[in-house]
Amino acid sequence: RPEPSMPMTFLSNTQSVSPIAFIGRRQPEFLRTVTNCSDQMKFVLIGVGGVGIDNFPLEQWPELDDVTWIFPDNTLACSSSNKRADFVPQSQFEMNYIDLLSSCDLVLTKTGYGTQTESVVNKIPTICITRPDWPEHEYLSNWHEKHGDVEFIEWNNVGTPAFAEMVVDMLGKALWTRKSVIPNGAKEAANTIHRQLLIDT
View 1 (cartoon, one colour):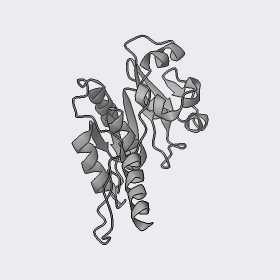
View 2: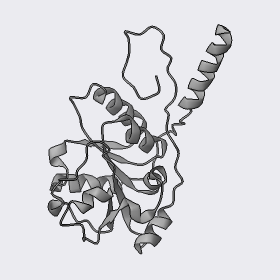
View 3: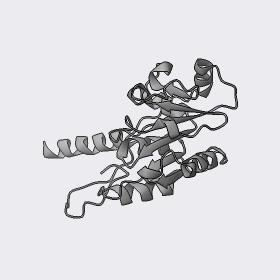
């Protein structure tokens, strides 16, 4: 069971391991170069995974000073607001996703193992859309609060003035002060399996 995960008390043969995630290469200067922005520019990555926002009314999305929003390409292609100067498609940077995430100042995501774990490992503040009907929601949220810098928001509040205030607040916080979380889970799991195979043979 890699961190974070929900308890599985009905199983008697589990073993906990560290998170399984990639550490990206932080390149904020490259983002500014590609977008021809000043050193004051902040980048917010929209990474909501399977809960897409392709039909979200981006016409009401907040415009904030010195903030650039990085959207999935499909989201902008579906919107009449895709020409806004502060909207940039992910593909414009030609970076792999984990490097892009680790180069941003903030990420908007939803409850889920991937981006929540990756944001903590890469020390990226997060606004997380809640999914209270999801079994893992409580456990992932508690882990994220313990190890990362995160605020939670309901889906119907995304894009509202309250959302804009949350973004400004998160971008204005001091540098990351949490203890580093090392994603050694894959190695730990492989070592455990290897030891078990030696025992079985």
